[in-house]
Structure formats: structure tokens, C-alpha cells
Amino acid sequence: MATAARVDLDGNPIKQITICMIGAGGFIGSHLCEKLMAETPHKVLAVDVYNDKIKHLLEPASLPWADRIQFHRINIKHDSRLEGLIKMADLTINLAAICTPADYNTRPLDTIYSNFIDALPVVKYCSENGKRLIHFSTCEVYGKTIGCFLPKDSPLRQDPAYYVLKEDASPCIFGPIEKQRWSYACAKQLIERLIYAEGAENGLDFTIVRPFNWIGPRMDFIPGIDGPAEGVPRVLACFSNNLLRSEPLKLVDGGQSQRTFVYIKDAIEAVLLMIENPARANGQIFNVGNPNNEVTVRQLAEMMTQVYSKVSGEPPLETPTIDVSSKEFYGEGYDDSDKRIPDMTIINRQLGWNPKTSLWDLLESTLTYQHRTYAQAIKQTMSKAVPS
Ligand code: NAD
Ligand code: UDP
Image (cartoon, rainbow, N blue to C red; front, side):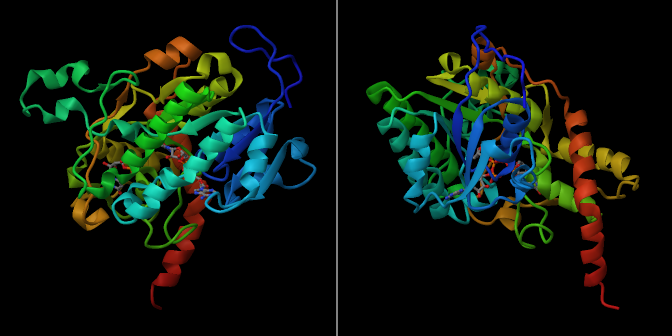
């Protein structure tokens, strides 16, 4: 635990607070809990239906932070204990959501319920009890860029005004209703609007976070190892799974979509600044991403193939990628965001935060983790699958 007096960005001492973290057992939650335990004096009421990713923080009881973290196995859809936990805390952070694209078009009802309906009581309890809320939204609320509607050869496509995504200026552009991919973005947009309205009409102290493809260790699952064999996680875990099994990486619709990836440890620094600088973070919507780490999905596949070969010592496949249609991969109703570059003006101005880690470096540490964690288990399942 940190012992020296810690100060905020304005030089004021930081007081110890209690945080009710909903979705604490997920990818982002696990990293945030780790950071809070290792570097701050804050207490965490960790709420989730799973705790596998934070077990190392909960046991054994001799851990130096054991009295600062409590796990509550609660499904926020139906559990009356939630309000009590929010009342006990100074700040609530809501990370709970269905947030895997393979679910948006195949389980649109669960997606909408999870991202809108289930988040409603959390907002209400915070507002009614005068508690601060940090709510996790998504960069996907921007949907598609204006630029993607321009003719392919238009020089305006090169103009940042047509693609850089700005919290207070860019429109939210989704596809038609039958493209159920947008069920997630639309639900997240509506909960953002509701939180904003609670701030405007009822004085709720809120911060909204829009993550732009945060990646790193413990993201999602490896199908057939620590998740369902037929499950489709987000791209980092899909490509890791392919690399671990020495099979070609699947490029959906040619892998032409562009993404910017930020290292989870950089992004968590931004969240800690929000937690500890309420005067600068309240009332704000923050893009959190790394505009310097842009690649097409095809380039990501090529880079991950090279990095994996380096960290595993195995030669890259002769045919490292194959093309697959989105209908085959995700099913009916899939659509895609074409390009996601975050504007960083607001987070820079309010919190002075900048990402540090290059794409190569973050892939190297992440794929080293994936190899160390899964390579042996994959070998075992693959050898069992071969008939003798
Ligand atoms: P994750 O799936 O790893 O974590 C979400 C956690 O919420 C899971 O542990 C899940 O069990 C829990 N949860 C879901 N429904 C619950 C319920 N009803 N009751 C209790 N717990 C429940 O996802 P993540 O990547 O850590 O994302 C966290 C948040 O950030 C989500 O709101 C997501 O939409 C948002 N986000 C993340 C990214 C990213 O790059 N990782 C990008 C955009 C948005
Ligand atoms: N994708 C892919 N192959 C895969 C998994 C994903 O080509 O095995 C693509 C997907 O179509 C999208 C991008 O990778 O264009 C990022 O997908 P992800 O699931 O990580 O989430 P998103 O960034 O779309 O929210």
C-alpha cells in the first residue's frame, strides 16, 4: 500500500474512498482492481457474477490489501443488495455489460437489456443517493465515420474532420435496424443520454468513459480452454487462439476495418486519474484510446503473427491469414465500424493523460502472457482430439 501522502492534479491530498465496482471480475475490472490495491489506499466492493480474473487479489487472506477488497457475487439484473452497496460507497464504477460483437446481432435482446435496462437502477441509485458514478460506455457510440459515406476516391477522406471522433462534436451514425450489430451502440448511447440528463436535471455527478479497443492480458477467453469451444471473443482473443493452435487468422470481410489499440495498463492510468480528480472529471465524457496505434485488422493479424513467432520461438505459418465473410463468421445482421481514431483534446485538457505504449510493445507483452498461460493447455486438448 502507498504510504507517502498522495496528491491530486491540483496538489490536494487524496482521501481514501470506497468504490462499488460493478463488473469488477471482467477484463478492465481486474486490471483496475489490481491498480487500486497495489498503488492506492482505496477500498473496493467488487461486484460480479464471476471472480476468476480477480482470484489472485482475493486470496490468500494474508495479502497486504485483504481488508480493502470484498467480492460480492451478485447479478445486478435481480439482486436487492445492489442499492445497499452503492449507498456504502463514495463512488460507483459500472463496467457490467455484454460487450462482445458476436453477441450484438445474435443476442440483441440480451445485449440491449444488459447495456440499457440493467444499467438503469445503477444510475437511479447513484442519483437518488447523491453518489458519484463513472459509467463505461464505448467508442462504438460513434458508429461509422462521416468519411465512409464519401466516394472512395474523395480527397476529403484524408481530412481528419471526416474521421476523427470528438466527444462534443461528432455525430453517432448507426446502420439500419435490421443490422442488429448496432443494438449495443444504440443501448450504450441511450444510457449515456440518460446519465447526462440525470446530471443536467438532478445534479448527478457522473463521468462517462468511451474505451477505444483496450487490449492486454486477461481479455475475454480462449475458446475451448477457459470459455465455450464455439464462443467468439473479441479480435485479440480470436487471433491469439488461432496463433496458439497454429491455424490461419480469420479476416472478416477482408480485414479492411481500421482500429486504434491502447494497452490496458495505459488506459487504467486514465481511469485512476478520473477516480482521484472528481472536480476535473465530473460532467465529462472521455475518449480513452491511442490515436498513434492505428492499423487495419489485416495489419494487426500480420503484426500479431510476427510477434507471436518471436515470443513463442515457433515459425510463422506459410499461409498466416484466410478471408471469411462476416455472414459466415458472425451471422446475419453484422455490420462494422470502419475507422476509430479518438480525439484526445478533452482528456488531455482535463487530466493531462496520454497513452505511452506502442502497438508492437503491447502485443509483445500480451502475447507473451497468452503463450505462457495457454500454450500447454492447447497442446493437451489438441493431442486428445487426435484419434490414436
Ligand atoms: P468484460 O466482459 O471482460 O467485463 C464485464 C464484466 O461484467 C464481466 O466480468 C461480467 O461477468 C460482468 N457482468 C455482466 N453482466 C453482469 C450482471 N448482470 N451482473 C453482474 N456482473 C455482470 O468486458 P470489459 O472489456 O472489461 O468491458 C467493461 C466495460 O467497458 C463494458 O461496459 C464495455 O462495454 C466497455 N468497453 C470495453 C472496451 C474494451 O476495449 N475492452 C471497449 C468498449 C467498451
Ligand atoms: N475480426 C476479424 N477476425 C476475427 C475477429 C474479429 O477480422 O477473428 C474483426 C472484426 O470484424 C472487426 C475487428 O476485427 O472489424 C475488431 O473486432 P472486435 O471483436 O475486437 O471488436 P470491435 O472493435 O468491432 O468492437
